[in-house]
Image (cartoon, rainbow, N blue to C red; front, side):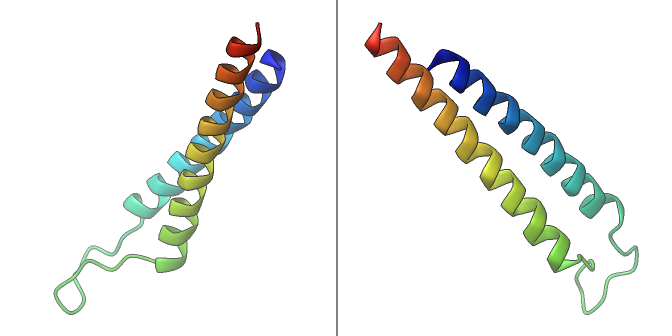
Length: 74
């Protein structure tokens, strides 16, 4: 079960790297001029970056849970 938690943690790290890249794209490609008093942000990009971040944290939690279960079973 320890190996499974390592694999899940590895995939979580990959998803977190993808989320960081998505957030970087959101931040770096915002419009310079505010429209209606706000800086323009693409909502689809924000939603996908937020979704990737949530998935990464959920996978990290799953990996931690698997590690704790393995720890108790030993």
